[in-house]
Length: 193
Image 1 (tube, one colour):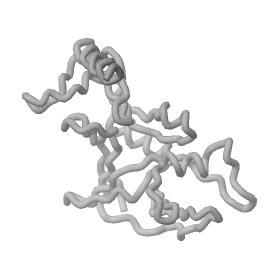
Image 2 (cartoon, one colour; image 1 turned 90 degrees about the vertical axis):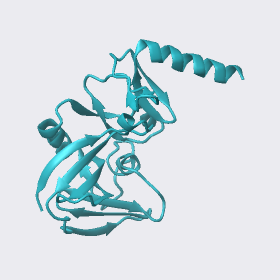
Image 3 (cartoon, helix red, strand yellow; image 1 turned 180 degrees about the vertical axis):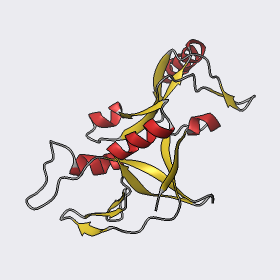
């Protein structure tokens, strides 16, 4: 298995309020290289080449939950458990097809290396809001973001110079001065009613 390409999928460019995600294209699906390891609290972790596959029973968890459980200095490993390295959730695409999966994560250092090579205008940053609640989630952030306000009429984003980053529906997105005023006005109107 060889990594052939990497890019950032930014759903905001399509008018969706979702965080950007690192996408990785491989020539063939990865094979398991380190057998699944089970932990006392229900976590299972295995390796597929450079990729990590994890789960917590049947619960829906993210790399933020994984990192808080296995890499946080505030949550040291139990006796006999390894300290695992931080990961980033990725979408893995197979060959030239449109087939992909979201069941893998990639080590933080490897993710940073791929972004430096293929997407240098992006970097990985901690989600501050989630960090305040104890999760450690790394997200792609543009180095020089533009306004991501969705123009429904033209079906595109505004793209003016960013004034400030705001949070809406759990997602941070940059807005220009004009759209920041619109956003603040709608927030104030919502609080008043």
